[in-house]
Length: 97
Image 1 (cartoon, rainbow, N blue to C red):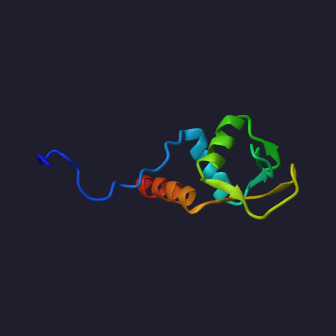
Image 2: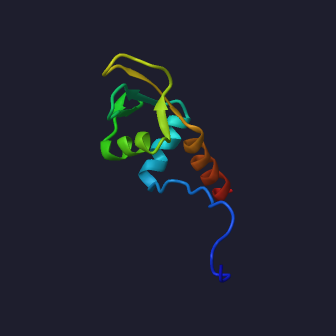
């Protein structure tokens, strides 16, 4: 080693999410979201389909949002935040204070 290498465990990086995705996370965190049981889950907020399903799929694939319980394919079930999703909105609340 020449002293330029990083040592120790790498820091865990949070997924990059935009403002729209953060708003979706806040809505799910407030209990307003439902998700379809699918490999490409669609997100519904207040009973309405999210207009940006690409972002909804990304939230699920990034492991930030998941179904609260198993369901039949296509069934809508409550959506919940994963610990990683909760950490993002908690960090946002701290930085806003």
